[in-house]
Structures are given as C-alpha cells and as structure tokens.
Length: 317
Image (tube, rainbow, N blue to C red; front, side, top):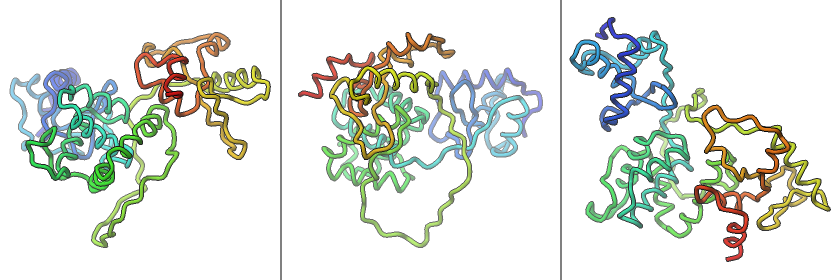
C-alpha cells in the first residue's frame, strides 16, 4: 500500500536518486512512464525509492501495484504520466542495429556516448537504447565472446528482421545511415520504402493499432516565417528564380510539387538556450544556407556543422 505521507518533494528526491544510480533492466517500466524535466522514469520504481526519503525504508514493489494505483497517486502530486511507446519503428530498429555494428567495428568505442547519441537522435531514453542493442546481440549467431556486448532476450520481431536485412549486406546497410539520420534530425518523412524481406505471415499473431499515444521527446522549434522568407530571398537572388543548393547546385525537378532544398542554420540552433532567441528576420536569413538533403546531412556529420567549402570538398571526392 502506498503511504499517504509521501509528498512531491519525496518524488523529486527519488528522481534525483535515479539520475545518479540509473535504472536496472528488471526495474524498467512496461506500460507507463513518469515524465519530468524532459526525461522518462518508471513510475513504480520512483514510488519505491520515494518511500526511502519519507520513512527511511524503500517500499518493496510487491507491496503495492503499478498501473492505475501508482499512476493516480503520482498524478495527484502534479506529475505527468504518459503511455509508454513500446514497439520501435523500422528506422528506430535500424539505428539499434547500426549502433551494434559500430560497436562491432570498433571495440574501443565508448558505449555510453554511442547510446546517448542514438537516444538524442530518435527520442528514446538512453537505457532503452542500451537494452535494444542488447536485444540485437540476441540475433547475432556468433559465440558470446565474439559479440561486442551481452545479449538480452525477448526482442521485438521486427528488430530481428532488420538485423537479418542489415547483416546480410553490411555495406548496403551502412549506406542507409545518412538517410535515416537526416530523416530523424530534420523530422522528414522516409524518402524510400523499407527494404522488402521475405517472410511468412503467422495467423496466430494479433495486432493492436489505432490508439493515440503521446511523444515525449523534445525538438527545437523552427520559425516557419523564417523558412518562408528565406526561400523567397534565395529564389530572388537567382537569375532563374529557383532555390538552389549552394554546395552542389541541385534544384528540385519540375515534376516535383514540393520544395525539397532545405535551409541550413549555419549557426546551430541546438547551441541556443532552452528559451531560444528573438532575431530580426533579415539578420536571421543571413545565417541560412540552402542545401539539398544530402548536403544538409553532410553538414551535420560534425559538431559544429561543416562549412560550405568542406561540404563541397566531400561532394567532389
């Protein structure tokens, strides 16, 4: 039973405790997450630890139930509870397999940095990314000592299909990275269909779909007005009135209705404070650079982004 003496301050102390010590895989949440200051936490674990700051003893998870009981209590203290995103998409699974491949290529790579980078890109928690890569390991047929990380069972079926496709031709699989990275980075729709994989549909499998869910990861707000005025400006300075990539000269084919040349921020907005900035539109346009999707992806292969001449050099090599 949840002690009624627990207050909001105890919950916050528990969250701070988790930030320091992390979350054991067996204490990960299954259906819901507590959302606090941009991060996700297992509601039942938070409550268990909170009792330590209330009574001096951590409440055993067998002494109270998760789900409605835990969630309603946390909501009554002003915390936000979100339905957990369970299944990973094809592109998310791809990033997990790609990350596993990177560890396989370079055994000296710092795992925590790789997990963080993938986490920031796809909007999943660092712990879920780490666990997903361990799931990938379970599909790797090699002996344990030849694998870059330990394995975790109960992997998503789609992850196995992505692993099979990627591992059958690693060179081709790696080539997809820049495309998928660009789609995540700039919130773009897929520009190619997922690879076709031969499989047998099992009639014993039932699916659930159509329910609404809330995405919890944050993206930097971009000014639609700036994009509109920027496109007009760069079209006006061209003799033919077309928006042109400054690195490779690409223009959208006339048969395509949608403008696909993008406006790159030469001064990254990810370096701004959380509150962003206010800037005169004329000055803001001077910080933009028209780039095609490929050149835009190349620009963001480093921090800070590559300069225009560096992108040109890569496109010519």
